[in-house]
Image 1: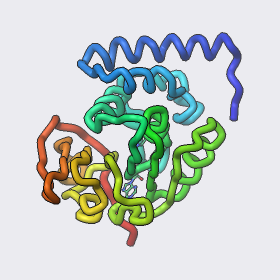
Image 2: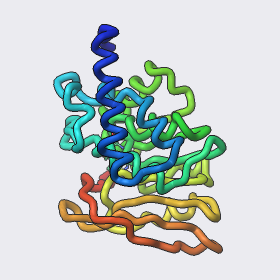
Image 3: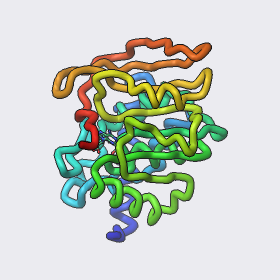
Image 4: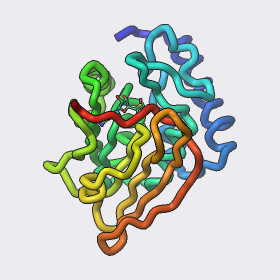
Length: 219
Ligand code: SAH
């Protein structure tokens, strides 16, 4: 890992503060735990080196293999929707860079995250370990199937656009738990939904239009 000078780290810290104030708080995210996590996680260490100076801008960034790390606001917003707390065990589908997993790991007890592109999963696992996140477990595989070994989960976050809600994920959500997921056709605007499991049934609410990379399946 590249070690930045203290002056460089200070510059990134200032950018992170500005990101939280201008992009995240300004758009209505209030959850103190979420804001603290967004101030803490060094987003510049989750993007390719060539993109480090763009890490705190108000947009998604390419991370290779046609994938992207979501816009900071979207990460904060989706995290807030889950109402995370230190007791929770959360499943993420779409590890990507590992950034969203790190944000969650700052707040909750345990994060399980699944990535279908082996290169991303392996790099994210190494990165999270090097950064000292001991409460994140990364698996390479098809997230459609969830992670039955560790189910049920208090919350589930899907960070790729699915055509419909994968039934195994709903199955693995705890009663009363929330899942946040973009649903829609690939390469079109999707609808970010929050789905709450109530009496075994999915109660779904539309949140906002979003564009995520497609949810793919193992062939
Ligand atoms: N949360 C990530 C961004 C995710 S981009 C971050 O913080 O950086 C969406 C990711 O979902 C991509 O890396 C893509 O490869 C992955 N993905 C797509 N379909 C998947 C599936 N079925 N199972 C697991 N991961 C999947």
